[in-house]
Length: 479
Ligand code: NAP
Ligand code: MG
Image: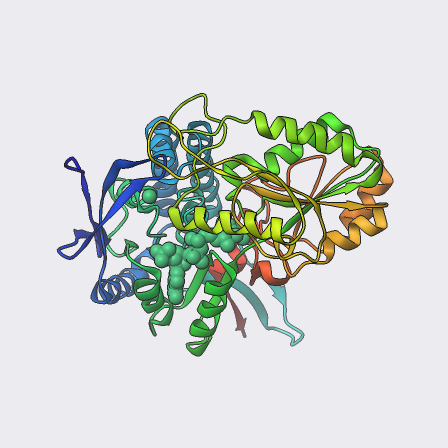
């Protein structure tokens, strides 16, 4: 392999890393080495936490204008350098160039949004029930916040945790997914170049099982925000609760899209194609259960499978590609196992096979599992690949019951032209986010994001709601 650039951890304002390196390999071409990334040590985590604690007083008591300016500057860089950063994102994670650039723009918008929010950390002042006493309710920073993020949105998810954390006056240690350290490293560099004070933001790359766990268990970390899988989320929750840390967990989904017999089929096909397969199905909000009214099932499946088969699977950096590779060999093996499982459970499988394109990579055709039931394992477990089960229903009531019959509750959707059906669905859906005639994936950045049941735990992320997690309330009585 050729010489690749070396990337270090940012701890206490210094770029450090005399230990091991991890090769960041492109899933579109396993001969393409994106770069070498430092693997932090437990001592690096300790040093990061200590430097964050040291920086906390100045950072949290300084003018909010300082925080606003820093976040705004990072947002501007992300927007200005969207092509280059988006390209790196696509190269290391495998989503298409359009998706990579789009996600970079989103990260920039998030930083800009929270730059303004830094100036809006407001409180209340109300009369006491005791005469002559005033009561003041203020929001203060939680303290040292550990962030643990997944690989599938390698710049947007770190952005939507870092920006509100800093806006509210906290100090941060980020442990990004080992599969996609490149985007996290860019955020660290942009923050450093924009003048982020030493210790306010720290990056420690390395495996979740060691670096992540040490961060989560660290006695001097006050709060943990995690996005990732349910099993890791559960382990983090039990580790964090021992130290009575504040926790926020965003986890998996098995998101239903209900297509009624009065749906506009053009809309329904477009919505299901996007929701199930774009970003290679590697979205926690992907539509992985398509619940289709029996009357239109055959016509709908005909059109959706035609559109799905026509999708161009290929190198993420090829502008003609519509579906990039699966992010890793392990994820691809997992997806292929579920394709086999669908067959053995009695579904008819269209697509889903591993394919070769020009370079060695992890390419898979999108898949539909026809004739699925909601009880099959492929309908109950999150696959996290370009695979969707198609389940038939007789009417809105049955479709809604199937939609809600899942351990998850992140997002849900309905395709219908009936206002009444849309209203019933949005009221009775047990998901945190509901979409009407829109894909289950694809959200705004200025409104709450999150789910119910096994999908989420703790306060919502994004928009103004983010401060519920990143601030602690203090009530003061003044006599
Ligand atoms: P994951 O395996 O759970 O990993 C997530 C993060 O946790 C990674 O940084 C990982 O580090 C770290 N980690 C692993 N074990 C740990 C431990 N014992 N202690 C502390 N940290 C640990 O998830 P993933 O495979 O990266 O991402 C896919 C999952 O994320 C899917 O389930 C998807 O639904 C979910 N997701 C949810 C949302 C949402 O908002 N609800 C959004 C996107 C993705 P390493 O990978 O470096 O080992
Ligand atoms: Mg990689």
